[in-house]
Image 1 (cartoon, rainbow, N blue to C red):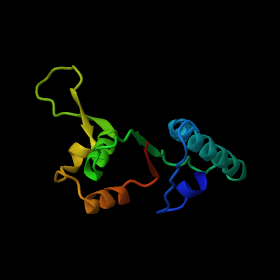
Image 2 (image 1 turned 180 degrees about the vertical axis):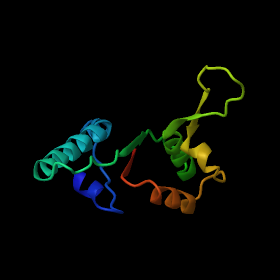
Image 3 (image 1 turned 90 degrees about the vertical axis):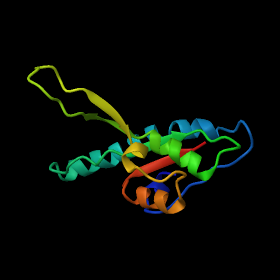
Image 4 (image 1 turned 30 degrees about the horizontal axis):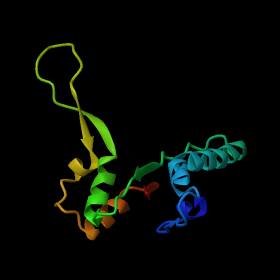
Length: 134
């Protein structure tokens, strides 16, 4: 799994009988990747202390249901990526500007339902991203 994540465009499919640990593995993907990347970074820093830390990886886990469609699953995944954005503030008040939570899906302003081309384009703009569908 870690080797595939390190390669651009590779995918991993984990399947098996009930109760063998597929969901448990899916739940720790982020931790596993963090440990591997941190270890690689530590080895690199020993050789070159000026090496900048690697960019943070985006890991999203979405539970899929039997009746889910392709657009529904990706819409849920893109709603899991969010940030807080400062809203414009008017006046002389010293209070902090209010923040608004923005999801990637809102930011995209993409057509609904999402198409495969839209998903492909978005994924191309999210380097070092991992999406886990369980």
